[in-house]
Length: 205
Image 1 (cartoon, rainbow, N blue to C red):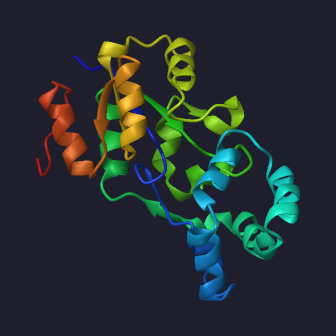
Image 2 (cartoon, helix red, strand yellow):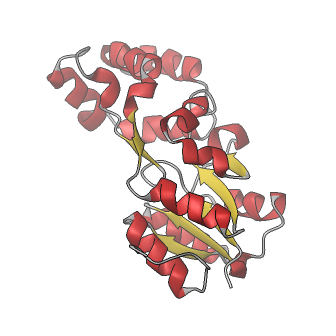
Image 3 (tube, rainbow, N blue to C red):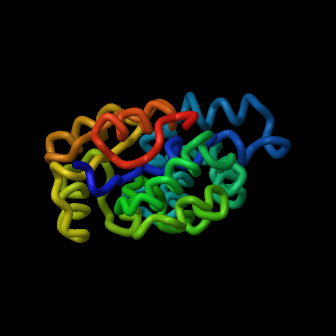
């Protein structure tokens, strides 16, 4: 039976919208240029993997100075990108905790902004611990971060369910031996857990 559940955080326990920091602060064309035309995903992942934002800004000054204002706003108002709990997940975490299931997190997140996660989704505070990529200088789907998670918390991979909304991260977790489930909704995850014998009530019970 599953004895441990490991959650990704962004868009699993807490809703994340990178456009939030720009609302009312930057014209939409500039937002679109930064988030879509500029390679924002790769740029942001480097902070998730441990690069300080100050170092990122220095690089941006050399390579794409037109996006400096957008980056500054993104960092200064990062809390506005966190839109509260993903529906149903707080109740699921509470039910798992009440059932005595061990709860952990594994998240790609900048070490400099991670302190904002729990205020936006208080259920994160019920987790025993969170492996934060920016603190470890490793990010999913690097297999080393799954190995670190397993070693640090003494996990039995076959009895550990990991859930994430990213297919590549799920694939890597599966290779690491974890019972990996792609997150779609809290109700679907609850059903997956019930099917594995985890002692929580099905949806609506």
